[in-house]
Length: 51
Image (cartoon, rainbow, N blue to C red; front, side):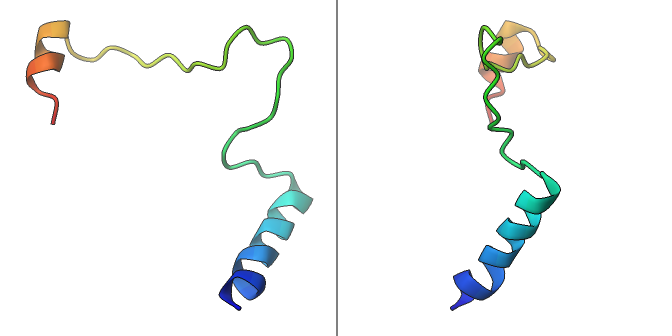
């Protein structure tokens, strides 16, 4: 009941307004879909401070 009365209307409204939360639009001209992350720490610091 929750799905049909809460989740489904939210999904319909988002489709009507063209909102794509997951950013899953297909771009046939793109070489890759990888997103590059900026390196904030050096390799040594990144390996020692994992958490």
